Length: 311
Image 1 (cartoon, helix red, strand yellow):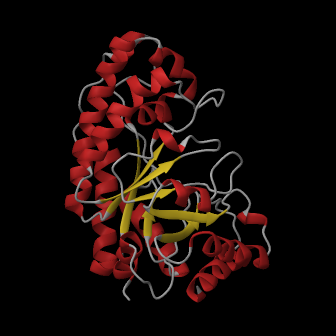
Image 2 (cartoon, one colour):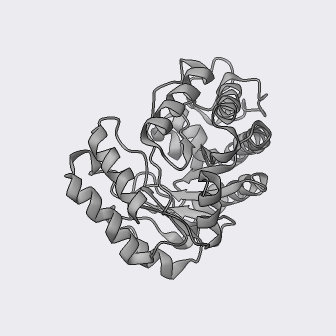
């Protein structure tokens, strides 16, 4: 099978020659531009022979000129829909075009992105969350502008040759997690904007990544998507077997990203086989549940890949 055939077979619940696998990390390329961003991904994917090129998002959402963070409700009123010529978007779209040309049609290419609220707080700082949630009128004005921009960005990625979106969201987290939302805030400030972005991704593969530990899958289980990527080994999260009881969608995970850097080769091998034992070979993509540290030893990455080729 080609990598693209293997990827879509896993999504469809068809037989695969081996369970597809991938992993990803950050490359700190925001100041280096889309070409370097693409080339670091291409080298990583080729060196490790991954089945999927999962592109991380190292570029932050552009703020209005002169605005570094949010200090008042009035700051939120400065947000307007942004042009895709902004480097944060243009360089990522450029990276997708380069990767598509580099790999040709048989490599699945996924772009990582975030829900509109998280786009803002990634740039402004998490301590601005009470200001946002405490000023609904201004917050909705800002989120409308960000969502409009992000929906057009999804179209730009699609046209550049992106096959799918890895949609990372904190919406499945609840208090007291500092990144969590109570039900009212989730329903008002998060869910409607996430669903609009998911609609804008139609035509691409949609993979939902409920980020963090202690997630409530019921928050996202009915979202329109093709797969769920979950840190199934983090405390308070459902394991793969529990996730299979909740959904018939393809599952992505199995490897503990928080511990991989200090595992033995035998422990990496064991996690691969434990994942297969829980859910079988179909509708599964073997991967860490989230980003792995850059210091994971190369021999463990090799062991992970080799073991996936055997299952």
